[in-house]
Image 1 (cartoon, helix red, strand yellow):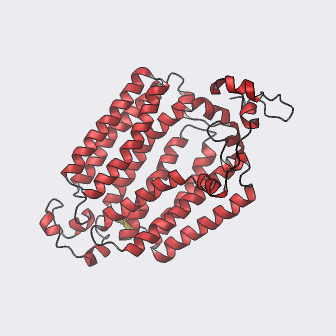
Image 2 (cartoon, rainbow, N blue to C red; image 1 turned 90 degrees about the vertical axis):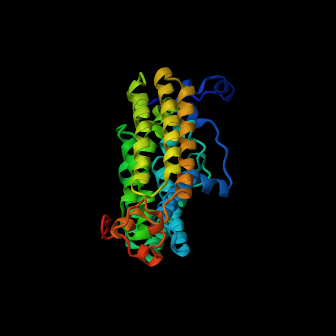
Length: 362
């Protein structure tokens, strides 16, 4: 793919003319040179740390902790887990934007971010991001446990060392990014149990698969903008959109058996199973519409549908969770569906969970 000229000598598209030209027809130079509003410090930090994405990371981490701990979790540990994860997520977002600042400047979607707009400088970004990373990982190691800290550190390494460099090179970056996004609930489970239990792997599987239709729908909507930034996404390679839409449909459908896995091991009840089926079929239907039409409106509905899907699923999951983690039930020789016996498991037993069907981290 050949980049459009971005040298200082290239002619700038006048602002009045640019306003009448569709976004898809603007050159990278015009986008980069059009003025971007400088942000206030609070807004700039919010954008730099990708606050909305970080909030999702924190939410899935908290859900992982709650699902693994049953009814006897420690508020201090949960708080340190959430705080440490939030700091590491914000740090990863800041360092990612530092690495991609020149590409972000070419894109309509990202050119108003703090670095391209000049609201925050590169050195400032580097220092604050490294401080957040160190503080977040330290909190997890010191006040939670080694497995949780290790997973958080792994998330930063994969995000910055593999996912970010891969984005301009291969559409496989979406799968790598999905791996990164699947780790937070595992941090929560590890914080509660000191291990990666069956619940941890199922939650990670759900998050991994959910991200694929979510980000492919987004990539379809911004495929030309991503091309301007020099990123390689599947819709850019798959010009007809057939493979992209097929993948959205199949991964949306795959969410149904994955979510039902939580009910099968006793981590959730029948109400959650019913809601998960309805949500999965709804998301699959939006993917099928994208496959039939392959237009921006269908992609936008699929993207918005994925945004609605996840919080509803997580809320119902927590509300309809089992009284104790499935790992503990299996270790105690109790059928996960035997609610009365599960209620007799004391919090002390939960704290010692993780030896039988779990895979302990070093």
